[in-house]
Image (tube, rainbow, N blue to C red; front, side, top):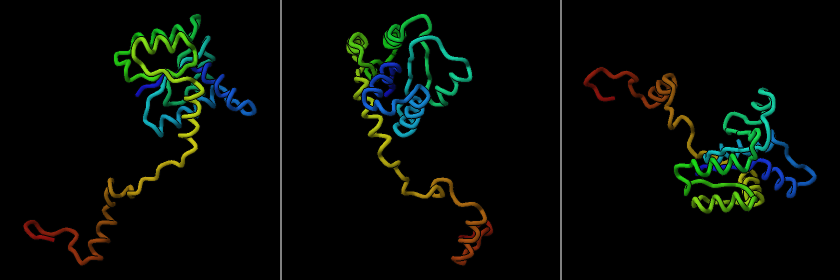
Length: 167
């Protein structure tokens, strides 16, 4: 389910939740990138104001998260436009505590989530240990040829049977 986030609003919720260690834009996007990696849900963050210098903007956004800066518009206006343009609004989660954004999301039948609630969800997800795949990677990738030959020798099998022979 795609998640559209009012970035400044989420930063304020983080400040309220953790006044002694509030994240900045870069750290927020780092948290969100890890959340995306764990949940598989795509995220789009919208911040108020002009974009910072190119290198700083690249540092903030990371590789997994599109970040939009509202420029001369308000972030709310950009978010309203994104909600209107969404081709599957029922699948969209909109993270903001702004009443007008919540109302716009509800009108399109998107799922509004208050910023403080999403901040809590984000922290719960990141606090859980990462799931460990119980299967070894070799199960999907297969053994290297030298490993296969070693196992064939271990079991007394001919590694390269002649055509028509069974191994």
